[in-house]
Amino acid sequence: MASTVSTEPSKNPSAPARPGYGQLLRTRGAWTFLLPGFAARQPFAMLTISIVLLVQHTTGSYGVAGAAAAVTGVSMALFAPYSGRLADRHGQRAVLVPGVLVHAAAGLTLTALALSHAPLWALFAAAVPTGASVPQIGPMVRARWGVKLQDSPLMPTAAAFESVTDELTFVLGPLLATALCTAVDPAAGLVTEASLTLVGGLLFAASRSTQPSVAAAGHARVEHVSALRVPGVRVLIVTFLGIGCVFGGMQVSLAAFTQSIGEPGLNGALYGTFAAGNMLSGLVCGALAWKSPPRRRLLIGYGALALTASGLWAAHSVPLLAGLGLLVGACVAPTLITGYTLVDALVPAGARTEAFTWLTGAVALGQAAAVTVAGQLEDRFWDGAGFLVPMGGTVLAFAVLVALRSRLVGRGRGTTVARGVGHREPVAVD
Image (cartoon, rainbow, N blue to C red; front, side, top):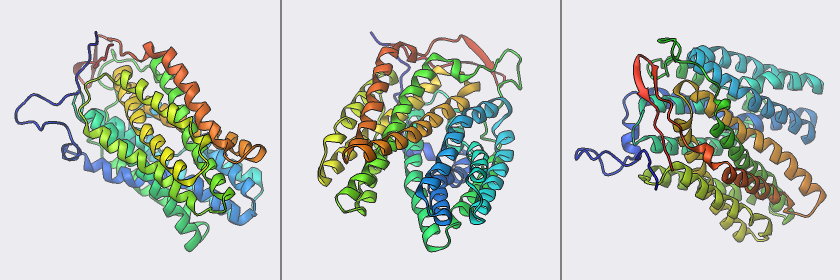
């Protein structure tokens, strides 16, 4: 017998039949953080490709360019959770304002060093703070939705909306960076990235009314607990590492496959098909009023992701690979959405931004590892060997998810006091 917190719409006759995107976007105050947040999160997808194109132009080496970009990615993955924890403890604005200033300065320094043909160690030294200070706008937006929609049936819709926004960012960001670096100047991508981060981040921070209040501000009874101490969060981190393996493995392997058949221009179309599947399934997922608990949905969705990803290595034609890529993408968005939804039941309100950044960082870390491993497999074995990475990553993560699924049940925490109002955390129990 399953007992769940219903995600069905209100039975109020005046309420719509199901929560939709129109209703979500009419939430009071939402646009004050959505618009600047969209601008400020573009750099997240622009940074890596901007570094690769600039450093390759100045050094003539893709190896050096990839190494500099990898340092930035790993630095971001390692430091993001601590940025989230600081935001939970001291408020988003207190972390975001100095963070975007540091990021803009570090990004411009990295640009200047690359243009002056500085040694590799100097590029690495600038890449570390550039990655470490990337503003975690996506998790901060999700935390703001959590405040605006507390216990609302619109929360799954908001999670879906954010997933689609993230995917749109990863489509537009690289295109913008590539166009700037190739048509304007090799340094234009990084300069624009730093500028968008600075302007968008400061405007986002200026929206104080939607910022989650600091949990410790009102009452000493609220204690800050690291999200990493929640067992369910650790399970979700493993599952999101597997999703990162899909992203990284697909990027490298699709590029190698199209190169091997003499059609490198198809790489963008194939990856776009994968991204389209992700976006479309995210839109559909957010439009549905789910009755089954999120843990069950995560298990089913991740099983489907592991199954479809396991077939990629056997695809040897463009139509078959496009079809499988579409299915893999269609399985990614519901899994991401459900994982983020589970955070609300697993983590106290005062640690949610940190929890979201752990998950975002896990995707980035899985992606960085997958790019490295898939590249080695493509170089040393057959064309398409890199597709073993999405299979291996998702199958291993699914095994962990199944074995530790009991840790994804939200446990009653009693009544906590935050923002001066007693509030019991929503719980989903199988």
